Amino acid sequence: QVQLVQSGAEVKKPGASVKISCKASRYSFSSYAIYWVRQAPGKSLEWLGSINADNGKTTYSQNFQGRVSITRDTSASTAYMELSSLRSDDTAVYYCAREDFWSLSYYYLDVWGKGTTVLVSS
Amino acid sequence: DIQMTQSPSSLSASIGDRVTMTCRASQSISTYLNWYQQIPGKAPKVLIYAASTLQSGVPSRFTGSGSGTDFTLTISSLQPEDFATYYCQQSYNTSILSFGPGTKVDMK
Image 1 (spheres, rainbow over the protein chains, first blue to last red):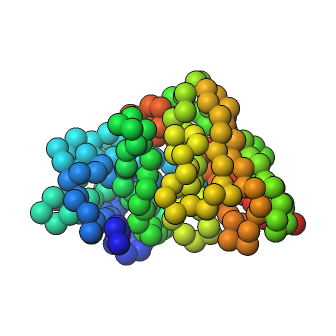
Image 2 (cartoon, each protein chain N blue to C red):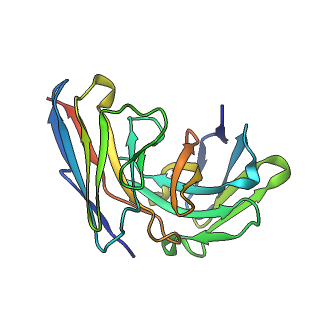
């Protein structure tokens, strides 16, 4: 079935960077945008940014502008999210998700990766 | 930015109960509203999009309604697998995705 497989858990020190991968399978990777969403322990969902997998155009949350970079490798059907200058409050589960559309204007996230835990600790 | 709020933040219910929760947007978003279910330790799963359209494979006991700023998710007869947290998400502003804080449904 259609799936997104994320890379494994990471432990980082404050100030470091983390790069997470999200490999798509069983669908045409370039036909859908990929979103990155995180969830801190006990908290709600927070959007970091997204990438059009076809043309590589990115959109970032202002909350992470300058610290987040989303890229993709179409030959590998993989999207990447790099977050820099990590702080303890960046400790969270990071999800990638596929955007689907209905009626050309309604979009929603229909396929999610299982999440990657990032622990930031000195 | 469009802010999303949800109420209640948590509720307790029994198997078979009818459960209703609400989501409110800080400005009109027409019917650009999605609902997700998240079971602890799992990724979110889309239940409803465009305020009232049931995602394929989602049981018909889930119903979404509303437009403008006020939306409702109803579970007609709560089942054991429905104990979870439910999030609303606006898709009106395609450049900024935002979620509500969630409603946790637990067992009475």
